[in-house]
Length: 492
Image 1 (cartoon, rainbow, N blue to C red):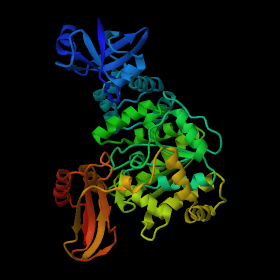
Image 2 (image 1 turned 90 degrees about the vertical axis):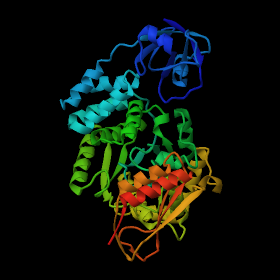
Image 3 (image 1 turned 60 degrees about the vertical axis):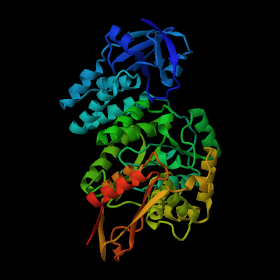
Image 4 (image 1 turned 120 degrees about the vertical axis):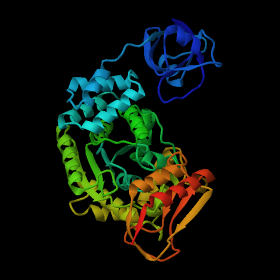
C-alpha cells in the first residue's frame, strides 16, 4: 500500500510510523507491530503507532529518524508492508531457556537490533535472558565483536587511552578529572561516556550540564585535534548503535547484566581505537559488585577478553562501600569536579585521591610516567592548574562554559538533620541513587543530593547530614517521604 507522508518533526529515538486507526484496521495492523517502509529501493523497519485526528486515512506520519534515513519530503508517497517476523526472536527465546548462542546467532540478534527489526519488548527479553542465564566467555567475546562491528570506528593517531568505571556508585565522577590530567600529559583520550543506567547520573549527563555532548564523528576529530580529548555521549556517534539501543532498555528495566556490561565497555573502547584501558571496578555491599570475590571474577573476565582483542587493559578494584565526593546529580557533581580541578580548600578529598590514583596508573601504563612515578606527575599537573586549564579547553571546544548560570542548584531545597548523636556506619548507594532519581536526576540537571557526612563520620544531634535539591516542590516532597521510609543512612 502507498501512503502520503506527513512529517511531524517528531524525534522518537527510534523509527516510529503512525497510521490512522481505520487504515491500520484495514491492513490488520496493531500498535507496536513491525512495518517495512520503502522509497526508491531504500528500506527501513519501523515500529507502528496508531492515532485518529492528526491524520487522514491515506497519510502516514513518520518520526525524524525515518525522514532522515529515507530522505523524505512532505506529501511524498511511501510503500508500506508488514515486516517479516525476524529469525532472531527465536534465538532470544533460546537464550531465555539458558541455551548458549554461537557467534552467528549473536551477530544476527545484534544486527536485527541495529536494523530496528526487534521491538523494545523483544530487546527487553534479550536483556532479561542475559541477566537470568549469564553468558560464557565465548559468548561475551562474540557479543563484543558483534556490537563493535555494527558501528563506525574512530581512527586516531598517538597513544589512545581510556578510563572507564563500571558505575553504580553515586558521585563517582573521576572521569572529568582524569581526562584533563592525562590529556595534559600528551595522551589522546576520546572519552565516549554513557548516560545513567542505574545511577543518578552518568558522565555524559554531568558534562551536559555545562557543555554539548552530542557530536558527529567529524566534529569529534576537530575537538580532539584542539585538546587531545573529548568527553561526549557515545550514543550520538553511531560507534556502537546496538549497544546504545540495549542501554535504553536496560535503563527502563533498571538492569545492567554483567555479561552485557563487559561487552558494552570493550566494544566501545574498540570502536574509538583505545589501546590502553583502565577499568575501575568499585565493590561494596550496595554497589553493582557486592564482594571482592565477584570483583576479582569480573576483573579476570575483562583481562582475559582484552588479550583476545590485543588490548593493554588493567582493572583496579576500588572502595564502593559508599558514595564518592559530596555531590550526587549533574550540577552537584560538576561542583565537586571544579572544586578538585581548582584546588579549592573545600574540595572533596576522597574524589581527588581516587582521581589521582587512576590518573597515575594510566600514565604509567602508557609510559608517560615511569613505574611508581605516575602519582608525582598526576599531582604536578593537577596542582599547577594545568588540568583545570585543559578541562576549560575541552568544555570550550564542546561549546560549553563554566558560567554560574549553568551551575545553579534546584530552587526547592530541604536539609535533613541527625535525630541523635552517633556515628555513620553505612550509606546505601542504591537507595541514594534511587532518591536522586526521585528528585529528578539525571534529566533535571540542578536536582540531586549533597552529602555533608560520609561513612565513619561522627555526628551530633541536629547536625546536617545531607540536603535534597529539586526543580519542583512535588518531587522534593516525594523524595523526603521516601527517605523516611527507606533510611539510606545507618547511624549507630
